[in-house]
Image (tube, rainbow, N blue to C red; front, side, top):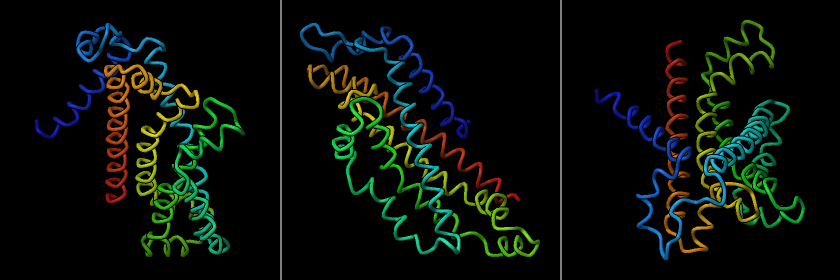
Length: 247
């Protein structure tokens, strides 16, 4: 029973989250004490479910782009012909960490305008480093006997990459993606400062109107999403590692 308790708890939290997003008015009584001067306890200026799905969509798009670029760079610099590009690749991956997302937004808005695009750029740059470093680690710490066996059977470089290297490195790469996604889920809230439709809209509206109920509901939804996504990706990572060891 204790083994299944964490999973059951996560399912309960997920059901409560979905229930709140679908029918938030049912929770108005719980949040009402956190309001002042007759303010509405539930954010009604936009649909919470729409904001959540859009928030997740932006994170997914940015993470997918960051994964393609970061893994591509890691593959490039682990090939004999691309090793000289390692310092340049690290510099590219570090751009997002050098410039905070707020600074990236400030630079991107004049070029891309307000809305989703600047947020995508900020999250993309911010998510590059953990994915790149994990992909690099995964591709450079492969078991020597496996790579030697692949060479021994006459596999080409592309065959080794597709059939041996990437599958073996996938759990480590997934760990970097997990970190990137969780950070992006929280960071995406700042996109609402440049008119992107994210859950940050609820938090910002609550702060500007001194409505604690709005701040709490926006913050809780973001936090619960981050925890659930982290747990789901961690479970997937453990499953991949288990399969890798059983082979």
